[in-house]
Length: 218
Image (cartoon, rainbow, N blue to C red; front, side, top):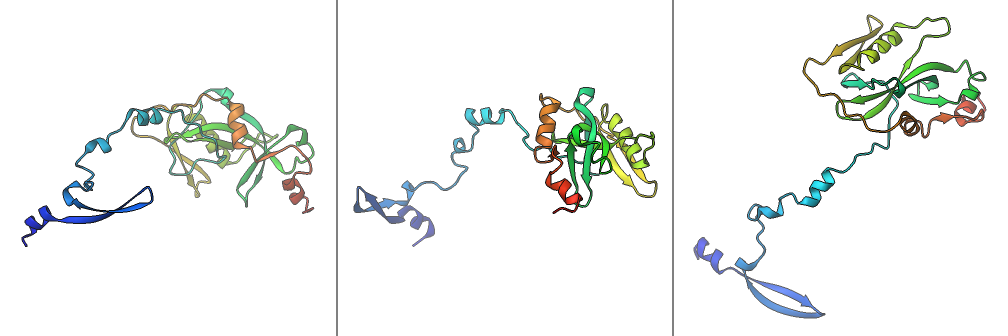
């Protein structure tokens, strides 16, 4: 039988079950659901509900504490109220940073160091907290920290990228060559940003497990 003719005469026996009864029905192939998704484009068209979903407010619940990676183009919030000078405890091997209550600073002075916590954002719109070491009580600082502070200040006005220069012992700062639009900063206060960033990394008790570990008690 010619192929074209067989397409027209093809039938299929379909077993239908309805209300517990089994029925046999011969259905022409032409009445079967069309499996070509492009025949009815309405099945692919965006509806109003989807547009409303796309326009929903985005909330970033997890805010990392880290320095910018070498691939990141970043900006720093230009408002000074979106940064905090404080003391943190840094576990270098674990790559963890803990915010420490002021009431403990004198007791664990040898384990903490002063940092500026900058509110920063990537080109993709991801917030993060950028901790940068501040000069010590003697006013001295290292080249890594000094170049990071310079980069953070420049990032309040321009998109920048940091790259470690091991030979120089500091960071090289690159400015974006193209015109990148200014970031859209979320309308949340610094307190909420830090609460999300340090939700599981805040030390306010001398018997905190991290301090116990440093003392060799656990």
